[in-house]
Length: 383
Image (cartoon, rainbow, N blue to C red; front, top):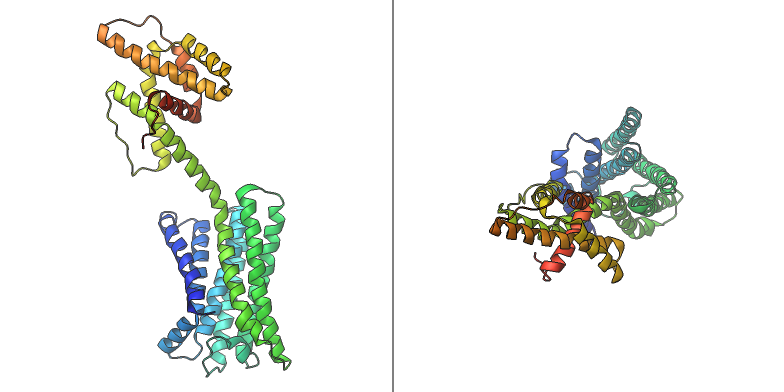
């Protein structure tokens, strides 16, 4: 693998981290948010610092041959720990029992990182190795212990996490199940990376030479594993993305009816575009409700019932027939109110029953009525 093979996934993961940064700042006290940010940051840093060009730069900058070795091992150890911590929060919440287990995992990771640093400082690795540090120094006192500590932790986490994910995936479905199965696949690659490295090191101990497992096979396994693992933790948020998309579609569908009612009542067409989507959706629905109340005296249940029966007879579904009937009634109520204002006539009945039936349809019902109203009044969709 060349530098670009490391830097491309590093850049992609860094972009994901930066996308999460505003949420991290707003919710920095949430342990789950911190674990997610830590996972993406460490994954990106792992790729960036494991690239041979970066290894050479770091070694020259620090002035210690092979200093990048324990640095990369420590970063990847923290990444693995972030995975299991996030999974624990993800599955069991933020209760005290979970917090105790998380502290134990963090303490174990801290011990591994300290062991890596101490072993490197006690060992002697004077010749810089950009790609084969593991196998070249596999039998060197203390450097050997550093390598064993890192690979052991990597393989332990690589076995525990997919086992947990597989068991959990059998009890859930949807985006969560997809994320868990992606995690299983990601850790299969990640664990294979550790096993390949370990096999090459053990081969050196026995006098053999399987260095290609460490230098050629392991890096692409790690690359695929890290990307899949990060994707696995992000996939369940697809449910939130889907919900946000549905909310936006509902908000947009309400537009034609909202604009017509605002114009009819003489109220300004103001929208706080910087506000959260949920807030804008609520405000738009509230405006529609308030404006429809002004039309209550001009609503006619008989008109709506006749229109619904006619739409059903033409083959419309019950939901569409109801929406067409409500939209038609609203359009006629707007025209009737405008005519009454011009002639000074008073409405003969309140029409509250018909309006109540419309308002009781909820957010999606109002959006469906607005779509049909647009079809009646404005065949061309307004942005």
